[in-house]
Image (tube, rainbow, N blue to C red):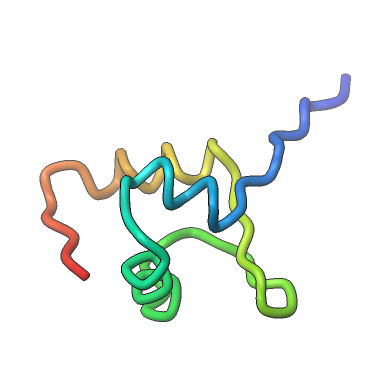
Length: 64
């Protein structure tokens, strides 16, 4: 049986999810804080990876 493939999230999607602007998100991406894959100059991730990251960092303060 095939696993369903999660749709990819883009930087725009992440800005909406985290209610942040481009500059703050770019700082987080450059610091390798988020679970993303860089293809060219664009970053991608999945909803599942973001959920795992949030669970892993629950109770921590992430400041950028």
